[in-house]
Image (cartoon, rainbow, N blue to C red; front, top):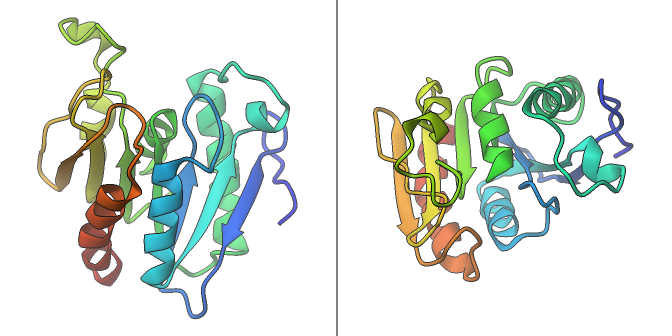
Length: 201
């Protein structure tokens, strides 16, 4: 689809549609950019198998060729603009699941209520900066805890960004790996276990 205009420049959306979709899944990338990571590809394939259309979103800073991520407020504003466009067009009428990996997962959590997401999928959620696990002021758990719809977190068992805790409506699945996943199968299995109930619910 054409690039989507946002308050901070155009974002790019890569659609993975299905016949007769029952829901839409919108996924954002990590700070380094790129929607072709192992976990995003695995989640996309599982979603499509369950008749969920997928939109992979590249933030404006990536489209513009910049390496440094934009500030959180800009990421959120651009994401909201893309979600609005998708909800009015390609994914119109579908319940929407928000998600992403790492920084993209944080964006999905912060904006879940605003976009009326029915669930949130977090891949490699960065609980804290590496080496800062003992500093409560560096924790991002509040972003996860603020989400009031079902959440799945798929986390590498040796992720230097920490391990989130489970909570009401929040499922945490540990899989082999650090902050990036080399093996797609455990990620796909975790998403496949969680997604059907979310979609049917």
